[in-house]
Amino acid sequence: MAETRKPAAVIAWVGIGSNLQEPRLQVMRARNALAALPASRLDWVSGDYLSAPIGGVAQPPFVNAVARLETWLAPNELLRALHDIEEQAGRRRAIELVWGPRVLDLDLLLYGELQCQEPSLYLPHPEIANRAFVLRPMADYDPNMRIPGAGSIADLLPAVAGQSLSPLPVQQDSEDLRRSC
Image (cartoon, rainbow, N blue to C red):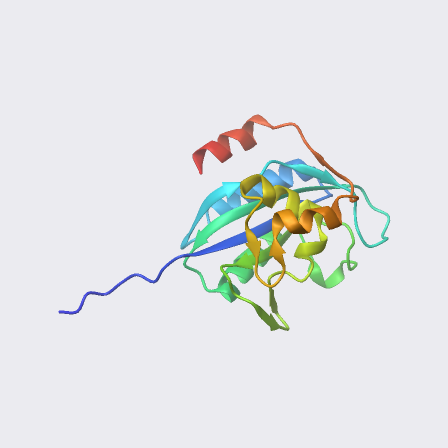
């Protein structure tokens, strides 16, 4: 009888952001929701960072973080799961402003080495190399990590050095979650 193998997991990176309805709490809840995703394992989460909004819409600053997942979900399945988490938090994509305030924003940043440009799935995320609030937390994990088609995080960071970004003090609940991953 032939041995059936489980498909290999893929490492996916997710950007987490919020600037409405207690942003740090929204980010913490998102971490918990990512930890509960089916066919996935939350491997690592960054600390929280405070960042200025981008895009010219007047709004409060964002709390941002990134998460590293080991997942057996297909990229479109994972993206749908992220959108479901956003909706459960109260996000309504159909009525919000582009680059406007968000209760919760979960971006699929990387899915292994996959590079694709489909209307519903663009990987790596098209703005990954332009966002300090993504690159700096990822650098906390591995500054030499490579972004497919863009280069290493260490090489990309100088271009975003002028963006407003500040690490926030560790919250006990967040520290407990990071240790449990």
